[in-house]
Image (tube, rainbow, N blue to C red; front, side, top):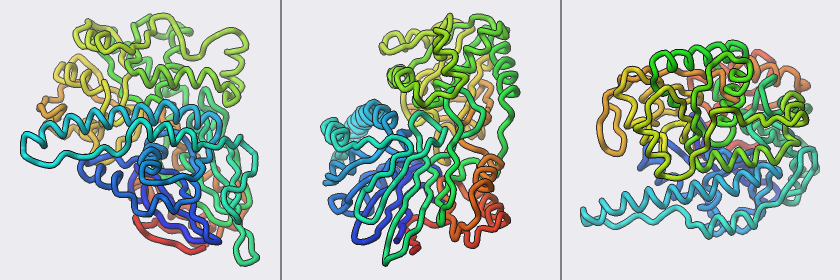
Length: 463
């Protein structure tokens, strides 16, 4: 088997890995690159392979940096099956449609400027009909079910505990009369976090492809998260200001709602108005409510008692554009949760533009902010801040709370690998910047993994 590392190597976005064996070609993930606009657009548009020659795509989960370029793949001629868990399929149905809609709006905006400058207009990456075709190509594979995707390659999804439907994928392959197992973590989740079950341990792997988002960082315990969130809400109440939380619509928004609900139920915070200002977040929460088979015992018990883990007094879901605009002039205290998590698009940009120059306001980041994103500039206070081409002074307070992340931290990753039976011949560290990937690679070597590598984009490894 050969693996070519095409994206999310030495960086966080654009997860995409090509495996080839026995004449078959299978993609692990097909994610969008995010960051510098021009560079990301070119990479997303110019797939580094012939899409029509791909036999199948195996999807770890529905986050846009893992699934978002599927419409482009289909647009370029891919006609094979897309294998995913049931919840991943349902989330992709809304995530991909939203993504293509936003891309079309962005291209329309850019093309107006290009035409005025006498330049040729850009073609969009994909169209809505490409999403329709992609959804028709999905084949559902439940957790724990072995499925042959091409001759000589079988996959089994196991719950990764990262977002609804996320999977650690065991890839069992046979070549030249020999058998081996490749384990692809996708994005590995965390133990003892609300809503989802803990990551499922998979043993007996020969080869490993693992993420390293937090490969050299540690998260705070859950109770510390509650205390920190309580303190921020109390600060906003005292100042009668706004708390802006940029959050991915899938996974992180639902988790923040769960924690806020806990605080309200315990009367640890007053009933501050909370607005989820994202149509996609609203639809994603509906999908979360549908797939209760993914819930952990704590969340399932809430549901069985008749409680809704994502609803509480003072919570409103905003879908209408005009209602969203009224929030910009609304008086605090209030909390706005809005996409995107890295501030690379969506309604959060409008809220930031109206709020970041007021020193009373607070911006809370609960995601890792990739290089070259607006979110990263805000976290690092790199002024001036440009939003929609205009410059703003950053006067609002900015906090980061990585402990709300559903990515495993360094110790959680190592605990997972330590519990796997020994015998890993080779490990590849992906989906992380070098300051996170290199320390994790060294820790894996200390665990006795014979060969640990941090591949470069375009590199091919033969197993």
